[in-house]
Every structure is written in structure tokens, then in C-alpha cells.
Length: 228
Length: 228
Image 1 (cartoon, each protein chain N blue to C red):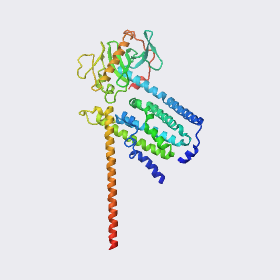
Image 2: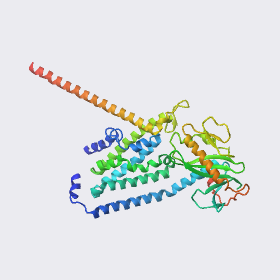
Image 3: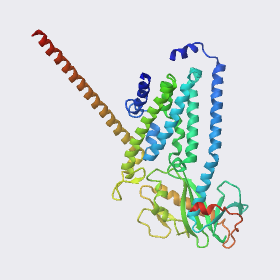
Image 4: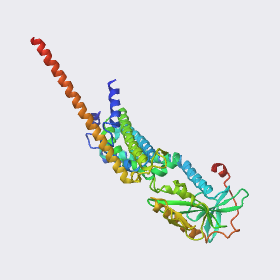
């Protein structure tokens, strides 16, 4: 039971506490490049999900046989193989989306979040934890991509997943779908994320303080009673 | 689990082992990539061919059969081979196998990457009957309006081609050889116009004299079903 809880913990941490984008600030290239619409963000997220989970699984299963002197090259070979698989599969199954994502799918190889998880986690833990960690991390990555993609598509095109939201009178903020819009949105989202985390921390400190005060009061009143 | 790992590798692994592990990984990865390539090859090829065929039917109205023509030794000859190159065009024929018009491809560098255009051309009245973007990586939301903005695409339907066409600022169109450019995508609009002008210049002297068009030798029978 205890192991299940910690495996769950490994998954959950990637979604929020150690979110690869908002906390670790990794994988910025696809983050900024393909998030000009929500659907691109989702496909990119799914592709990264597949690559990260399968590579983590393999790296973790073969960690005894991977000599540490050549480990990084081997990780890159594993990752690149899966990226090629994803690239061809999308080209065959979703040619329209492949047209839009085009150059960025092969670039998943260079996503430092994926290599980072192999080096920092999968190579040191057993398969179950490695896969849970990969699921959590790529889930967190997808949440971040989707957040950025939705904001940029809503403001920049006035639509979400291609569905018009505001009608003809809306003047789209063209800059949001251009590269500067990516940086602006990411900056603002990071600001919001950090503000939220800080507020939560302050709140937890306050709660802890109040608890301690209560405990102290209790002890002192009990002490008074004893004296009486 | 980490300790067992390091005790196994306390001795430096020999270079032979390092080379072997890289070679094995490379070999397996190569095998996987070849497998996925072969698995998806037919679908990808089919997708591309279907896309091209559909495009021909879109730019040339009332076409039910088509064949490829290759410009070789100063004349147009019918080719049956798969594949497409810069010296090939399509000829479209109606139900009674009577010649209708040509579908001509052209390409030029756009705002981000090469733009491929296919347009239909009637030599009888030198009209362009329609235009379709086969491939482009123009900015999503702006440059991609060259195929998403139906007003722009519509301007190429029944466009007389007596002299070079010109892209002008939206709303200032006065002559019949002028095209309203897309606001915010002037470069992309101009590229489309430039491609058509170039292709027109290259192909108009090469096309067969009216009434002398190559007869339909083979036709792709499935076409009609797919175009609907």
C-alpha cells in the first residue's frame, strides 16, 4: 500500500508541484513555437507524452546494461527512435495536423525535459516509478501547453479548438499568435503560477502559526488548571 | 537499487563493451525506424496522391478524368508513372473524355518556407479557374489565410490571365488583373501571385495549341468517387 501511495505521488508531482514548464522551465522551444492554437498544443502534448513514457520505460528497464560513460548517447538514440515513430505515425494518420506542426515534431528529440527525466529519474528508479513519473511530467507539460495554446488562440484568433467564440465583431490580437505573444503569455502565466504558489505558502504558514498558537494556549490553560 | 548498479560497474567497462552497446542500440533503433517507415509508407504516399488529385478536381471544375503530362523534348507527353516533378502538369477531361483544361503547379519561397500552389487554367479563354495551396508553412492565423480565407481563394476563380496579375492593398482593387491582398499577410498573398505569374510564364508557351491537346490515354477511375 505504501508503495502505491508513493508511485501516485511520483505522478502527481509532475502535474503541479514540479511542473516541467511552470516550475522547472524546461522544454521552452516547443512550448513557445507550437502553442498558437489549442489543437496544436494537444497533439504536441500527446506526442511528447508518448515519447517520454516509452523512453522512460526503456531507460529504466535497461539501466543495468547501459554503461554510464555512453548513457547520454544511448538516451538520445532511444528518444530519437520514438520521435521518428511518432513523426511517421502522425504523418500517416493526421496529415493535416502534421502540416501545421511540421518542423517541431522532430525537434522533440531536443526537448531537454525528456532527456532530463531520463538522467534525473528513470535511470535511478525502477520501471513502475519511472513510468509514473513520465506520465506525470508529460501530463504537466500538456497542461502547460494547453493553457498557453488556449489563451493565445482565444485572444489571437477569437476561437478555441477552431470554434468561433466572439462572432464577427471581435478584433483579434494578432500579436498573440505571433512569437512575441508566446513570450508574453508564458511570462504572465509564470507570474500567475508563482503568485499562486506564494499565496498558498503564506496561507499554509498562517494556518501552521494558528495551530501552534492554539496548542500553546491549550497547554497554558491546562497548566493553569493544574496549578489551581 | 542504485548500489547494486554501481557495484557492478566499479571496474571501468572496456571500450569494446561501450562500442558494442552503442552499436546494438543503433542497430535496434535502425530496425524500428525502418519498420515504421515501411508500415506508414503506403498510407503517406496515398494521402499525398489523394490530396493532389482532390486539389486538381477543386481547381478545375467539371473534371472527371485526369492524366499527367510531362514536358520533354519540346512537347507534352503523357506519363503513367507515379510521382511528380517540376516539369509535369495535369490535364483534366470531362465525362466524355473531352479536354477541359490544365492544372499547373508552382512554388516559391514564402514568409517561412516554400509555398506550393496548384492552379487550374483554361487555355480556351486564358482564365484561371481556381487556386489551391498544396503545401505551406505560413504563419498560423495570418499567412495561412492564403488557403483559409475564402474571399482570397475566391478571387482566383475565373480570373482572366491576359497579363501578369498583381496583389494590391485590400479594397483598392480597380483592374481585373488585380487581387485584393490579405490584411496582415501581404507577403504571403504576394507570393501566391508571384508563383502563379512565374508558372504562367513558364508554361503558357509550352501548352499545346488549342484543339491539339493530348487525348486521354489513361484515367484514374476511382477519382470521381473520392472527389465527392
